[in-house]
Image (cartoon, rainbow, N blue to C red):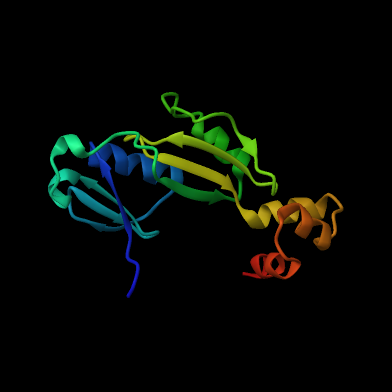
Length: 154
């Protein structure tokens, strides 16, 4: 078996496409008009109710039961880019998880939760640059030094 993609419902395929291409830099893999797929495996579907065979009223906005996650090397630069979207509804402020990764959460145009976090390699390198040893980073991030080293080398 092979995983192929995640499909999310959108009200306006063109607006959603522009949002994901502009804000996240996603690239189109396939375009079927009311359904498009990006090279990363995310697909957008207008008329989702038709696709899955459900009544239109059963397709809920802001169901808050799924999150689309991205990691960004230039997290502060992304936060500045995000300011170009004044209508974005945030799910709180930027915060730092116990393991040191800074994240921001917000809704996309159709009410799907988006999480953008610092690239984990950047988090590890930030700790190492601050003078922490790999063993100290391992304790802070609650991950083995071996796994963190593998991540850095991947």
